[in-house]
Image 1 (spheres, rainbow, N blue to C red):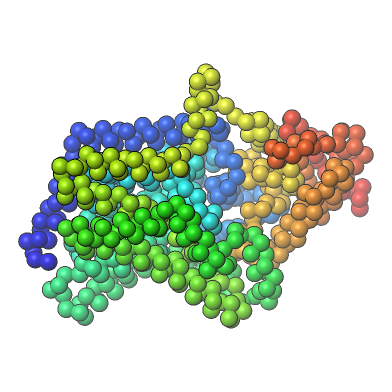
Image 2: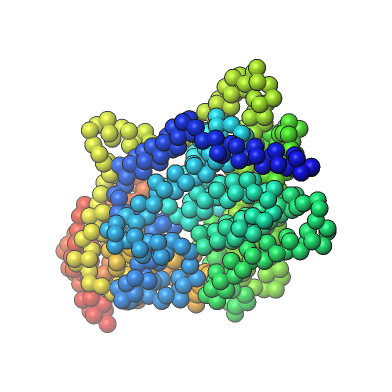
Length: 576
């Protein structure tokens, strides 16, 4: 490519971004309004200061564990900082900073949600303007990437109700990709681009390495022809080293606090991990097959292949299209091929794989495939201006179908609530959970461990970060312990087995006797049980009355229509 052509392409990209018009301002205001509406609709159905389980509650618990270590003596995970020290993303200090300002760790998470929705949408708008040189198609790209889509491995794409690490990364991702595309013809800027890619490891360490490699690989296309081969190799090595230097502190910290490699009870730990993690984490070929089957069923696979082929033919610069295709190739190499190779080697050596998460990076293939679903239409619209309205209508129809297939489900419920004249409509279980976790600090002293029964298991993480009280067992703990502490993982698995037996007990009196025994064995001082069935279609739960608790030597210290909190001190003394 001649110097004149390079200058023209650079000026074209600059022109598209610098020619900011009233229409752009209207679109950005629309993005802001949608972000606000999304948050308000969600908070109509959930308390501002709570997150009902999941990764967000787990991360909030880590932050609480660092801020109030004295409160978590006897906790199954947070009692030992070494169990979660490996988790060193930016979310922990951000939550620690925001919690006193917002009223808690849950509200700190909630306060970040609107920013995440805005950043992702704004980033894809900028990326769309650069790729398509057209505002209309950029807006369609934004809408496509807003819709929530779920895949195997517990992965998703689109906006998410909590500002967890994966959502944080995907909110910043389009800004990284826009930077790569904008500066693809300016090698002097590449070190800064690679440094930005490396810094994202502190946002989501699972996603960042694959994308850093994909970006690095794609930039090879744009090395100046004037460079000799040794200079090209040296420069690519240089920008790769810059990214590595940025990532290195995190990597050293992670490996120093990660229990990996060979262990004496390798097979037992491996089986526990298979039972704890979703199907596919340790069976990577199966996970990849399931993932692409989902893409096929959603027509993304075939449409993106056709779309990328058409775009390669129509686009004025094939290298620009190949840039995006190399992002896909880089992700497949780093997030599919390398993990499969690593797991195979670990299995041959009889070791636990040092990483089990990189496969999750395939979640970033769908947005690139969505891009190729509308990019050829944008090119057709540009080439055949006389028919651009017909082409634009086709694009709008495709996006409307995608929105219809993948709606944001809670919007209708929130709107219905507002139509009834209410600002908030909470389900009974959420309302009673909020009452419970608000009341716990007043009835349970700090560092007094609580055993949460299977009938109330979804409240355990909320108790940690909202009530700041220790919980001796949570199903989520197995994930962190699998990384950091295999000895504690084995203990956790024993409790999990006992909890599974208890959950199958149909006689409520036997159930509470078993729970009381387990509470004493785990040094729990309190037992939290649910009064109603977790499943909506389950038969009414027979809950023992206070006289039975008295016979067992249990004292009910708090109760509402959904939960009962029992003190166990006398029961354990009587047993001994």
